[in-house]
Image 1: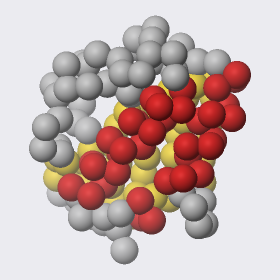
Image 2 (image 1 turned 180 degrees about the vertical axis):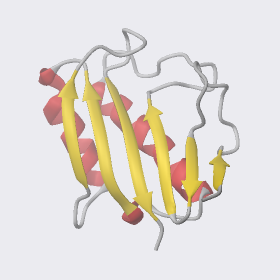
Image 3 (image 1 turned 90 degrees about the vertical axis):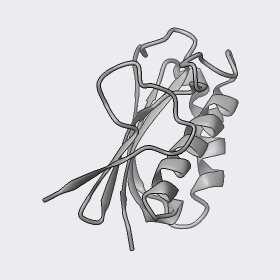
Image 4 (image 1 turned 45 degrees about the horizontal axis):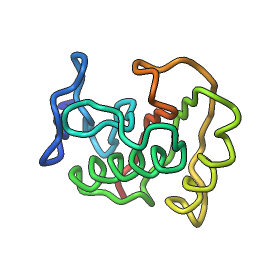
Length: 127
C-alpha cells in the first residue's frame, strides 16, 4: 500500500527521523506530537492545559492537511509527565472531542524535553 507524507505548511524540522503524519489508504497516522513551536522550543511552559491545546491544534492541522477532520480520529495515545495534569489535559481534550470520543490510553512517563508536559499520537480513519 502506498503511503503519503503529511507535512502541514509551516511545520518545523523534526527532532528525529519521522514525519508529522503519514496517510496509508484512508488512515492517517500522526506522530507523537509535543508542544513545540517551529524551532522545536517548548511552548506554554508549566501549563498542561495550554500545551494540550497546542498539541491538539497541531494534530488537527496534520489531519486536515490529509483531508480529514477531528471527527475522523479513532485512537489517541496520550503521554503525560505528571498525573496532577490529568484533569487539565482531559478538560482541553473534551473540547476537541465533544461527541463520541475516540479510543485512547494515557500513561505517565518522561518526555524528550523536560518542559513538555504532554505528548499525543493519533490515528484517524478518513470518512
